[in-house]
Image 1 (cartoon, rainbow, N blue to C red):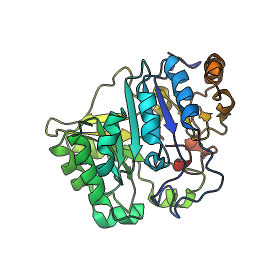
Image 2 (image 1 turned 30 degrees about the vertical axis):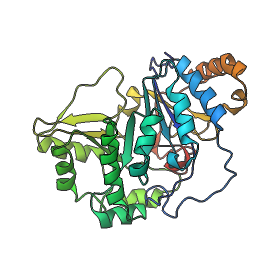
Image 3 (image 1 turned 60 degrees about the vertical axis):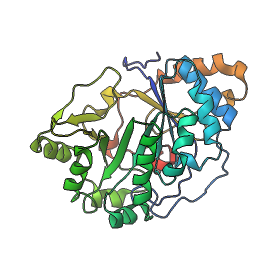
Amino acid sequence: MITDSFGRAFPYLRLSLTEACNFRCTYCLPDGYKKTAPHDFLTVQETVHLAQAFVRLGVQKIRLTGGEPSLRRDLPTIAAAISSLPGLSTLAMTTNGYNLKSMAKAYVQCGINALNVSIDSLDPKKFELITGHNKLHMVLDGLDAARAEGIHRLKINCVMLKGLNDDEWPSFLAFVRNQKISLRFIELMRTGENAEYFARHHYSASEIERRLVREGFHLKPRGPNDGPAKEYVSPDFKGSIGIIAPYSRDFCTTCNRLRVTARGQLRLCLFGEFGHDLRPLLMHHHQQAELMTTIRRLLAGKSAAHQLQNGVTGLTPHLASIGG
């Protein structure tokens, strides 16, 4: 398995398929997605060549992200090709869930076996306020459809926002009390375009953790391949609650994932200040050896940690541009 100079192993790749998104989440794309460059995203062939190289380097899990990955009409073709790669154990996808109800069966058929669904509020009016769409009922129906089709590795992503959804604590707890699902609270991250929003709505992950402890939750021991998320469990709850706290002191020590943008740039850090263009090495299958050598060489230059706590957000203008 590929490692960096700090001994961190990377069994996990987040692979963006598109920068486009059809939601207008206030913390990411408040004015909606605006096309600023041609949609020359990686082709099916390029995407599969890329995934194949990473799997040969020891990656066991690939997550398809965006933007909203289901906006790619060729998503089933891409997913089917990647899911068949020898050595890959998990093909996951992160989605806003707007069409999950109608697509759940197709996702299973093309090999997607885990889903993260973004739900930032369980109140329909607040959901619409945050996302720009009155679609909470459709997303929740989509979760039921995914379960019915056999996708049981389900996680809910929720960005905790001061003054917007932080008063929904009882509803969030009730959501995981009687169903086996992981609700993951993500601490709002500063990006290139959200400085004012961040100052107004940032809610500390440490406060969420204190609230969980008061409710009787305890920190679950980390598994060998677990990433930065801290998982809290309680004997009174069937589900669990995860915390993704990018401002915590030890966040980067457990980094186990790499990112590639929809145009083929390898990002060694979500908040790095530059990327590495892999696209010239994705044209032909015979470039695999050179591609793998390049990835190994670039990974040796990965930094120990981001500088987010110092206000350095890198070249990420918003999370839709890199897949979060």
